[in-house]
Length: 113
Length: 113
Picture 1: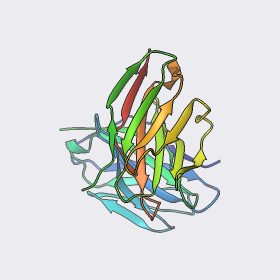
Picture 2 (picture 1 turned 180 degrees about the horizontal axis):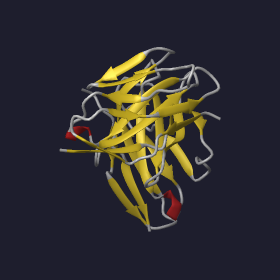
Picture 3 (picture 1 turned 60 degrees about the vertical axis):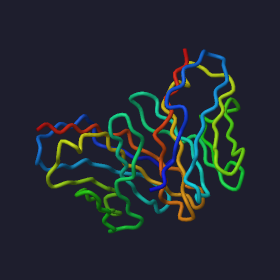
Picture 4 (picture 1 turned 90 degrees about the horizontal axis):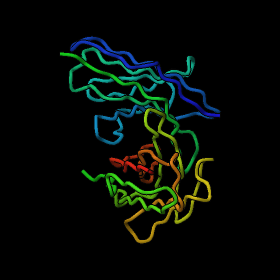
């Protein structure tokens, strides 16, 4: 079945460090790929998405490129801030119509000043 | 900006009791979803709903669960006889005509004692 695997957390970085959170997927069709973020005490917010191979999603300084050849969608940011501390979820959807999201296990990111 | 809302934010119930979790999706959206997140685990798909019927449901969504759109705005998840293992955060989501982007509510934390 369809699945998403994220790098193990938690991840702790200093402010202004470079961030990479790895995400790989397995899907039977041609998925759309997403990164969602969950700030403490809040729900899931869409961070960025890409719907086809080689698309790059970007938002708030975060980027991820849909790599079909490596079935990956790694999240990157060049310079993280304390306010980026959150749990990040990689997800995919495949089906037409009412598409369910399949999530990775989440990566908790803590940024220290 | 329109958002998905959920009530209550926290529900405590006794094992065997019925609970109803309520959601108000974004007003012009057509597709509705419930997900759950057991503490420390992945976000899991429960059910999708379109045109007043279930589109897809997961193995988790057994006969104890039901969903309803009782009027033009609310979308509810009912658990008929709660079990300890139903304790989780329940998220409602909705999407519009282009179904690849789902917008999530802040969640209801259900605690079954």
